[in-house]
Length: 424
Ligand SMILES: Cc1cc2nc3c(=O)[nH]c(=O)nc-3n(C[C@H](O)[C@H](O)[C@H](O)COP(=O)(O)OP(=O)(O)OC[C@H]3O[C@@H](n4cnc5c(N)ncnc54)[C@H](O)[C@@H]3O)c2cc1C
Image 1 (cartoon, rainbow, N blue to C red):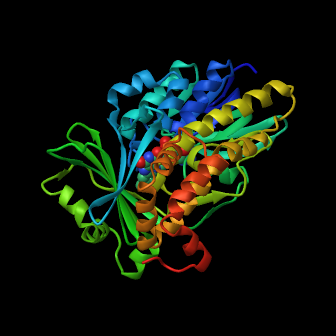
Image 2 (image 1 turned 180 degrees about the vertical axis):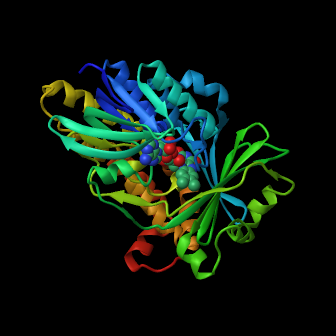
């Protein structure tokens, strides 16, 4: 389809193959690859970049792999602070070092400030030929004969209407686009609030740390030399039950995680904490005729296992394939069927989701969690498989899952699941 503009007073009508709502990592990567394949792509974001995003900014090695495939890792790498992995800590002690790689090949995770990463991905989309606009907010999506009519308004209050064959909802956790496309989104367990900030520190961390307490956890990682990201995640029900909210939350949380407080001794907060919650959401479908959802818009569980960015980027790869095939297979007079995307996501994500759920359930009982983590740490084979699954460099297979579960079983997981009791 040709890119056409028809000006009607201050209202502009544009026609393009694909409209991408939201230019965070998921939207920018989708727009970039589709533009590279020759489609006319219009992407827009309500924010002006560089913009920040509440995120603990830790990336498992699988993220680097996706960025490499997209041809953008070489630009990101100079700003990425490499880390051997993530030490899971309870009571200030490392109980499970999560590392990546196998057979003598060592992989590493990394941290990178979102304010930088997201701007680089947005510029990458522009370089690839996508028409990316900032400061434009979605106001409407309606079905038309051969696709959708998408309306936006810019900061000057001017309206633009785009007619397109395919819409990508990449506008984050509370996706207005998904709602306008008729997708139902609901909160789900676990209901947690995330608070993130940067601190100037005298000593950089050699490795990421995930401190787990009762009803909360905190991720720490060096994101730039001399700068540490601190990501606190608290159980909303527990915080509410204790009457803690607003500015009192970080203080309350740090009292319960003395090892984190010790790490922050003498550190200076560089920017106010950004909060978001409840974070966990599911959608009733991720695709339909002519549309699909990527990144957090397609649902989000919890940042503990760090798969937010990986899912956003890997999900965009799956979206690109589905849209490309859909647009090529259908005439310009018909809306492409993009429902196959749901199956692609299941194939790629379902295995890790099961592992993630086991972790989430275990985290509700700190003693169970500690026992499982210690048990995994004690089995080299299980620890390796577990690290690579969490690092998004190995998809769980029945064989690897049984190794991991076997490692946990040594700590009594079978008896926990059989009797439902709390291990002591
Ligand atoms: C507290 C916390 C900590 C996290 N820590 C990690 C971590 O350490 N590692 C990790 O991998 N993941 C982490 N995540 C998850 C990660 O941040 C997300 O998964 C990731 O940002 C998803 O990218 P996205 O492109 O889907 O959405 P976003 O990055 O949210 O981008 C969506 C874009 O849509 C735009 N938008 C929204 N509404 C509109 C509209 N109406 N019109 C136009 N534009 C719109 C927004 O401005 C935004 O730029 C964390 C999340 C939270 C909440």
